[in-house]
Amino acid sequence: MLRRRPGRPPNIIGHRGVRGARPENTLAAFELAASLGADGVELDVRVSRDGALVVAHDPDLSRVSGGRDTRAVADVEADELARVELGGGAGVPRLSEVLALARARGLFVNVEMKRDVPDRRAVVRRTLEALREPRFAERVVVSSFDPFMLEAFALGSRVPVALLFHRGQAHLRPWLVARALRVDALHPERTLIGRDLSAAAGRVVNVWTVNDPTEARLLADVGVDGLITDVPGELRAALG
Image (cartoon, rainbow, N blue to C red; front, side, top):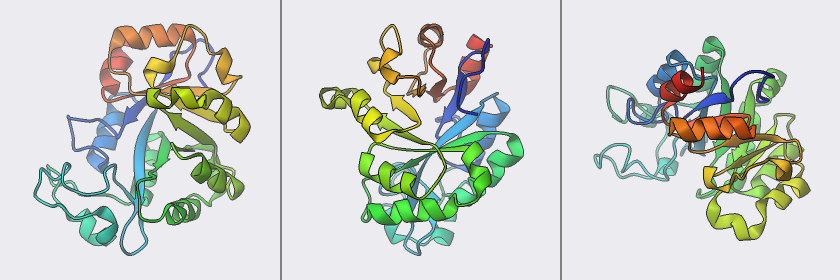
């Protein structure tokens, strides 16, 4: 599901679903991404106070709630997070809910394990538990900026893993780190892509965050497998 199919444009991956048009990382955002022609969706996971794996990007609720709720995600139980008003009646979903939606809509899912959490081992453990069924190996990729979290996850699962990296990490030679980790995919920031993908050594390459149709066409010509975007509908229209 992750590899770009011959003769086809790159996969379109909705970044947190669709940002702006719906509250990010909500069921409404993922549903909209599917209706706009996305092939997959990207999301972020953290562990709630009662040990559930929930979908949230930030450590706290301040930004996504418009300042109405400032509590840390890790300090709130999952059922209560689902009732937090993020806009349009949407709350913070559990990963299991998003996986069910994605399965029904034919989407693959990029699960990013967040590293700015009280306990990284708990995030890895809960993600392993959530994805223990063999069928997820064909529909999910797990990513992180933390290579140690990825390595720990890969030891216990057949689900593909992807190393995330940004331009501030270029001096760490992340392409070589990815080879050492034997990850299945690379998720570089868009500014790190050159004219060819030889450094990827044949691995899947999904680039973030690409919102400009002209840039999307250029990256498609380079040969990337996927484009992680806030505007999946615009890129689908541009690339066909």
